Amino acid sequence: MMGTQADAVTIAVRLILPFVIAIPLGLVWFTKLDALESSYRDLLKKTNQLAKTASADPLTGLLNRRSFVEQFEVARVHGVGGSFCIADIDYLKAINDSYGHLAGDDAILAVAEALSSVLGEESLIARIGGDEFCAFVPHPIGDVAELSQRINEVAAREFRKRSGLLDYQLGVSFGHQVCKAGLTFRDLMAGSDTNLYRSKRHRTRIVQEAES
Image (cartoon, rainbow, N blue to C red; front, side, top):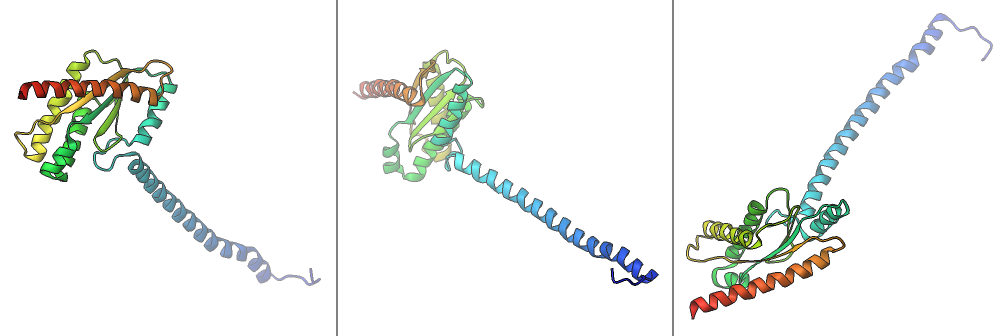
C-alpha cells in the first residue's frame, strides 16, 4: 500500500499474526460458551425443580388445586373419560383441638396415602383445601361404596401408625360423579360435593345411632 516491497519476515508476520491472535480468542470464546451452556443447564434444572414444587402441595406431595385443574382439563380435551372423586377428613378440627396440629398433619398424610394407594398411580390426585382432596380416575368405578370403605380402612390404619393414637378411628367422607361430556371441573366439584355431604350425613347418623 505504501509502495514498498515487503520482506520475508514481514510477510510471515502478516500471515501468522492473525492465527496467533485468533486461537487464544477462540479458546476464550468457546470457554465462555461452555460456561454459558453449563449455567443454562443449571438454570433449567432449577426451573424444573421450582415447577415441581409449585405444582405440588407442600405437606402431602400431591398436586395442588391449580395443577390438578390444568392436568384434568388437558385430559378432558383429549377425550379421557372416567370418574371424578372428592374426599374430606371427618372432624379434622376436632383432631387438631384434641391432639394437636401434628396429629392433624398425620391425618392429612394418612388420607393422602390412602387415596394414592387405593386409586392407583394412573389417577390424578390433589389436596385442594385443608381437609379436602379430589381425584380424577381415568376409568369407571364399579362399586363406589367398596372403594370408599377401602380408603377409610387404609387411612385409619395409616393414621394409627403415624400418630400412635391406636384407639382413634379416622374417617373419610367420599363423593363421586361420572365425568360426562360437557361437565366442567366446577360442575363435577358441585355434583361430587353433594354426594359427599350426603355420605357424611349418613355416616354421622350411623355413629349417632350406635352411640344411643
